[in-house]
Image (cartoon, rainbow, N blue to C red; front, side, top):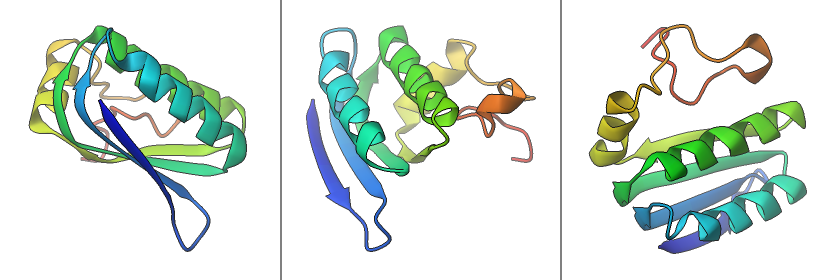
Length: 113
């Protein structure tokens, strides 16, 4: 997995990840997400070049989102590959109503889309 981190003019963090987001590589992204969520109020992810994903990768993203929300921070996915979105859908992660209120907006909600 290749990961790059950039700070925007507004002070937010943008993480660009490419390659495989599976059990073998999720630890790399976990480390970066943990660090950036500790140091920034807003983190966005560009996952447009993710080639492979498994349930471990999806769980990592949901867990990071919950951590951000419970810390009063913002985390979003700005771009996602078709393969990632397909896996989200097939795995049952798509929510029509979203997460519990304290974690809204849900990363995978189709509400209003």
